Image (tube, rainbow, N blue to C red; front, side, top):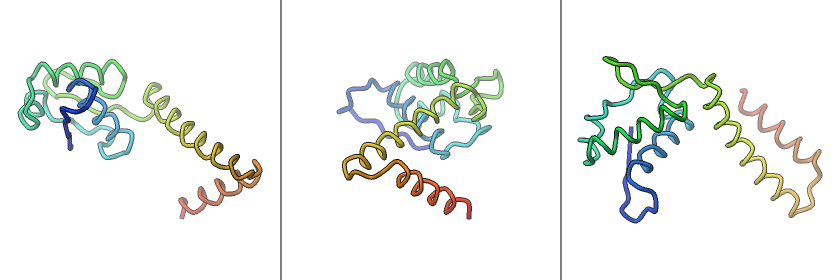
Length: 126
């Protein structure tokens, strides 16, 4: 797991950690069922306090991305988890909205856009 912190960011450090872990989960870089580094280990690796990493992990747990089990650590939850699924849906909707707006700029029809989407879907299956 790679976490890069920036003093230039408007986000507090715990939020930067949380957002980067969340992004890695959504991108599949951190897989379902994977155990995250311990709070102490992550704090040491990135040079922040245990309180900061605790806050990030607590927020991730509240948001449904991870579950913490005493003695086992924090584990990434299944994509079948309703909240996590909702995050994926938001990402899909955002990407599709960008595609729709771009298509409208060049006066593309809905059917043309759907055809492209269908072709891309089929290409990914092979």
